[in-house]
Length: 205
Image (cartoon, rainbow, N blue to C red; front, side, top):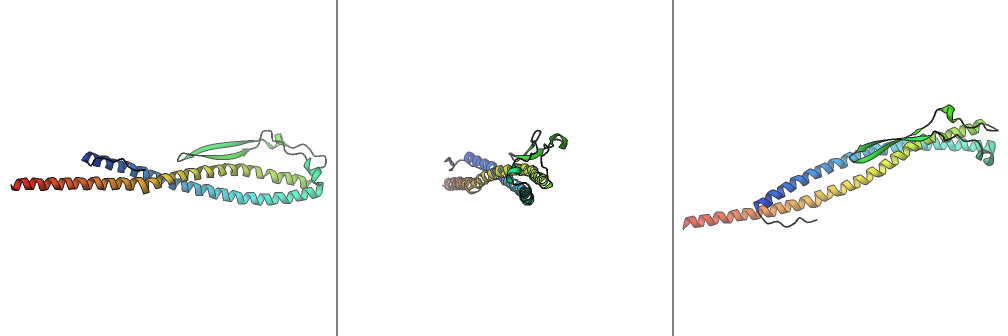
């Protein structure tokens, strides 16, 4: 982006100085914004990694319970083992805004335990019950992880946009304005010098 050509006048010099001030303020805002976005990105990433480690630990436990249940019932019988009903299960989402980016805090909402008790199995076993409980324990954590994953995606996209704009102001627009200021200022100084020499020459006649 190139600045439009201006006539080297004092009005143009004042206009350029005002543009420089406005662009510098915009750069400071974008610079602060990208720092705040980076800080929130790191915070969300830390939550994501902590929760992912927890989910991996629960997943290993759930797999062990699944193996025990399959060994007890067999795959076919376990596949028809009564599942916990999903009636009343939902996701609660709270929104907040960080520098124009909408962040979501998601939480799994479960009804009272008594209202969602699974049907009785014809051949119940501790292994099958523990398997069901182990996998059910993953759902709240996966729900929270889904919200954090979306936050990371949106934060990163906004950070990249802000970074591009800040670099454009820092490396392109501001240097062009400074160069134009120097050119106009230098021309006006030459004009003032010529006027001064002309006045002295006239006075010496």
